[in-house]
Image 1 (cartoon, helix red, strand yellow):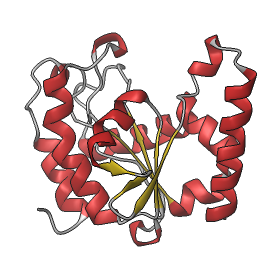
Image 2 (tube, rainbow, N blue to C red):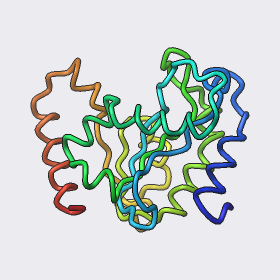
Image 3 (cartoon, rainbow, N blue to C red):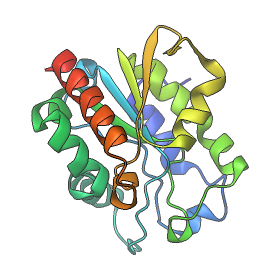
Image 4 (tube, rainbow, N blue to C red):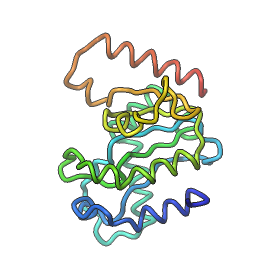
Length: 191
């Protein structure tokens, strides 16, 4: 197991296990965090990056800088910043996906693609040691589900949330209110 996030990041950048996915972008996208990883308490998991712009010929550090900027303004980034506040995102927040690569036209992932990245996800959790895991997709929750007991992954609380795109086509007011209440509680815990 890598001893730190940088080593794990380098391992993920070298990964070429999924031939369909590694054709989309020149590099996998391991994770997003803006502050000191030792201060991270809230660990968020999505499905996969969903970025299909062409990055051919771009150096790795430029790619990662762009990925951080894109995440800040993407649907999930904007949603979480609006609900949790920039301070939590900048100082206590870590975001990753079950699969580190985009899929063609943001299509569903194949089972082996999820399984190929699962060890990276577990290593990220072990390195960060968060107080809480928030999942923002059914896929993310289902990947952890076999190991979740009474709402905990080991000693880490797990909170499943709807992806914000769900609210674009569903006007389920109860679901919106429930999720807003959950996010308010999370904000209170980590402020």
